[in-house]
Image (cartoon, rainbow, N blue to C red; front, side):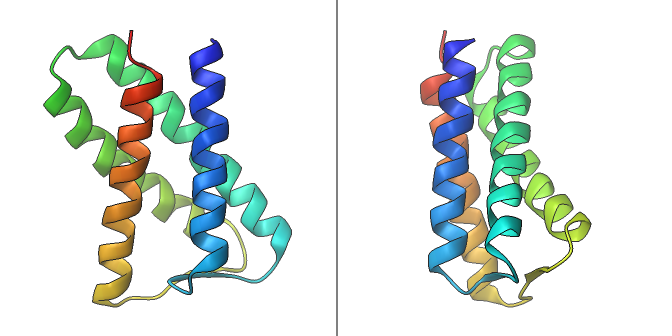
Length: 112
């Protein structure tokens, strides 16, 4: 359980810093940034925890974790008011890099 909490807090802080310091995802309020970062951190840590219990191959867990993280960020942006993802290639590359970092943090902290 401690590893799950560590993954949640680490990912939440990483996502908050990434969103707050870049202009790829614009958020109207600071509270929206904090709430969205916490949701992304919680959902991605939970997804990775479930993938670690269900799958043995690390490659498959990473692929599913990256795609799941992208879906989590998209769902968070569509459900929270004030979130807007700019539709361009730089934002896509940013989201791929962010999902990769989140997946690797999850793999490192939730490793049994």
